[in-house]
Image 1: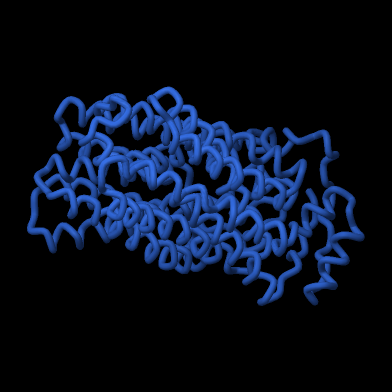
Image 2: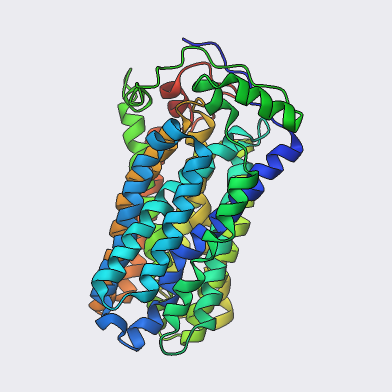
Length: 443
C-alpha cells in the first residue's frame, strides 16, 4: 500500500487561472453539444438535409458515439501527452467538425461532422475535470468540478439563444458556423496561458518543468506519489478497478453513468421537440432549453457544496430520484409558468447528478491514474449518451412523446438503484490506497 499522497501544488490565483480557462473551453463544448437539439425543430420544419424524426435521432447518436470513443481514449491520451495538449487538440477537433456540419449538403456529411465533433467533445470534458481536480483546494474538489460543469450548462443556454437567433430558413448553418469560434478564441488562450498538470510532469519525470511552473506561480511543488507505474503500464489503473473484489462497485458506477448520460443527452436533444409535441409553442419549447440549463448551473454549485459535505455519491443518488420526479411531471400539461418552474428544477438535478458522479471518481484517484478513471466512467456512460438520442427519436417518430418522459424518468430511477447498490457511505478525506480503493471509497 502506498503512502498517502501530498496535496498537489495549489494557489488561489493559479487555481482561478486553471478553472477559468477550462471553464471557457467547456462553455464551447456545451454550445457545440447542445446546439443540435436547439436547431433541430427548425431543421425538421424545413426538412433540412431530408431529415425526419427517426433520422434526426440517428444523427444525434453519431455525436454521442464519437464522444464515447473520445472519452474512452482520453485517459490514455492525456496520461501520455499531457492534459494541456489534449485540451488543445479536442477543442480544435470539435471546432473544425462544426464547420463541416455547416457546409454539409446531405445527412451523410453532416453525420460525419457530428461524429468527429463527438471525438473532441468526449475527450475534452474528462480531461478538464482531471486538471481542475488536481488544482482544487483540499476538501473543495466536488465544488470545483461543479463550478467547471456550470460552463457546460452555460453552453446549453447559449445554444438555446443561438437557436432563437437563427430561426430563419437555413439558419441552422449559421448556428454551426458560430460553433467554429472556439478555434479562434479558446485554443490560443489555452496554448498561451493554461499550465500543465504538475502531477503529470512529475509522473513523466519532468521535474525541472514542474519546479519552474511552481516557481512561476509562487506555489509549492507537490511531492511525487510513491509507486508510480511505468509509462508503458497505462492499463494498470483500469485493471486495478477490478482487483480485490472491486469489480462489482466499478460496474455499478459505470451503469449509473450509463443512465445519467442517457438522460443528459436524450433530454437535451429532444426536450424542445417533445415539449412542442405536448402542445407548447416553438418559442416556449426553445425557452425550455435556456431554463433547464439555468437550473443546471444552480445545480452544479449546490450539488458541489453538498457533495463536499455529505459525499458525492449520496448527493448524486438523491439528485437522480428528484430528476425522475421532474421528468415524469413534465409529461403532464401544466400552466406555462408552472412548467418553466418544473423545467428549471429538473435541470437543477439532472445535470449535476452526473457531474457529482464524476467528482466522486476524480476525487479518489491518484494523479497518474485520475484521467483514466474519469475517462472510463465517462466513456462507458457514453453508451447511454448514444442510446438516449436514438430512443427519443424513435418515440417522437412514433408520436409517443408522452412515453418519452416516462422512459427517461425510469432511467433516473435505475441510476439511483445502481448507486445505492454500490454503497453510499462517506469516503475518507484522504484515501490511503491505490486507485482501486479510491474508486470504492467514492461510493
